Image (cartoon, rainbow, N blue to C red; front, side, top):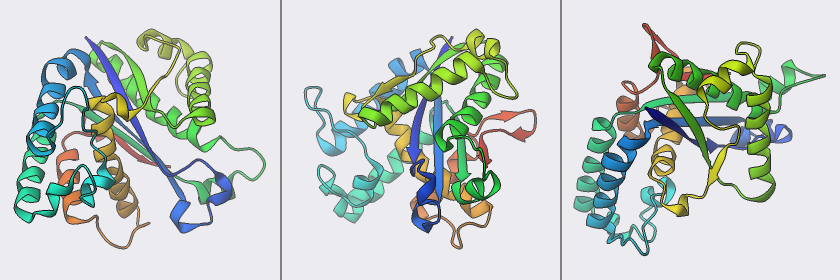
Length: 256
């Protein structure tokens, strides 16, 4: 079996913005799917949902974006109707509940990171990616499987940064995992970087769960005064059963 982890980023890796409460945290959330399962189950069912509600067509597919969905922006205007919104939310949540996948989320407090490591410090993105992929390696070893990694394209220099961080992990490993362990289970030394516009189901699903997962981690660690909003709370309830576990311990969410 071959797996793929689809990664979505919330926030930015700029340490100079860490004193701004709106930019203090960087999170990476990964959704792990078995590839034939995506092809045969997830993608057809997600496309059927988009066709039913948004008239998606293979020649011009509708791409799910969390923010546009929440605000019923084009092409999601039909969600302004409360009845349609209720039915769509119900069907989407049912799919997120019934699909077989694993979630790994990592959130970094950049302000604390900057204050703690005043002389030398990890690049925030590389640090989050290292922790995320350590857990992905654990999952692949536990499943006796191999896999690769795909992240959403940010364009230009950002994509170069993503690929460089991944290649460093492949070649050098981390303090806890030797490079040979990465190379044994990861099928490529290159990070796959794709745009959501390519209609990649895994990236769209990662986009849908990334903010709720991040907000849950921040709320649990008392960085948010209020619990997530109602729809986000429903997603979090689903993720409770999707976070990666080893034994009885949850390894699928981590506050750094």
